[in-house]
Length: 229
Image (cartoon, rainbow, N blue to C red; front, side, top):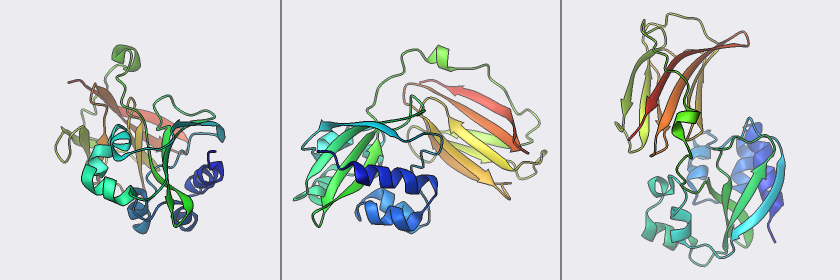
């Protein structure tokens, strides 16, 4: 039986960025908990609706099963992960959300802690996109450097790009959004964003980075670039 109450509580609290509630349902040894300790929510599912279904994918999951999820190997070392979950019940659950993006993480790792189910990790199985060309839009270059200073590939971490914003903004913005449209990672800056940077995970088979300016509810793409291996 899937402990759906934990999943639903996480989803509701994540949308509200309710760190206290999330801390109660996230496993203490999870990287998600480490982020929460710093006041950050790693998976917000802000654009998704409620859970529509949940199916057990692996009833008795091992460290190897967890590491098959995309980017899990960047968060866990196999022997340490095996030690962490030893003695716990661990299951992997495929969760579908209303209006979820096709590339959103949908496999939840749930593990018991002191007899209670907790969210341990959220990811997705590594699958190459069917046709990258169909997912790419025409490139756009911020030639004047009004928002983007530079983008560096595999600089701080494998399968990421470091997006550096300019020190001297040429536009006013309420929000600067940076996203990898294939991998589905989204980062946003509000307030003072000049000279900021973010490491954005990208899909190893290829991805598209889009930088968008949001002002008074209007969105404008100012930079769009493709990355292919």
